[in-house]
Length: 80
Image 1 (cartoon, rainbow, N blue to C red):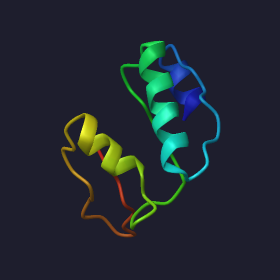
Image 2: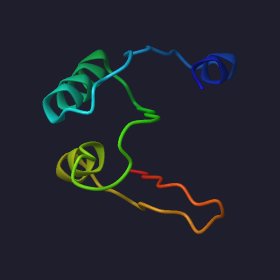
Image 3: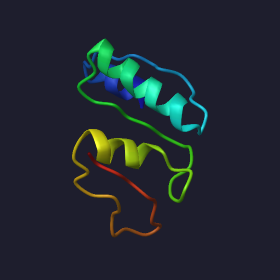
Image 4: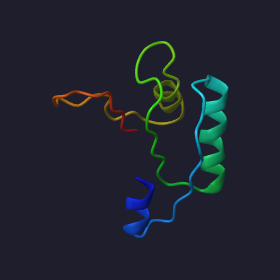
């Protein structure tokens, strides 16, 4: 994804791997915003349930437009 964004002309920053821990995820999002990110793309990690810290963070700090897509095979997807 990083290479595709760069090939399309985007200025990118790889923020590395983050543990599925609430504070670690919050700090990484805050780091991205301090850097000036307009778009943040995440992959992997816990996708649903009580250890999904990304969607609640997005709900608290922005607007979640949708959280699932009607597609098979279905994968959780959040657009905020």
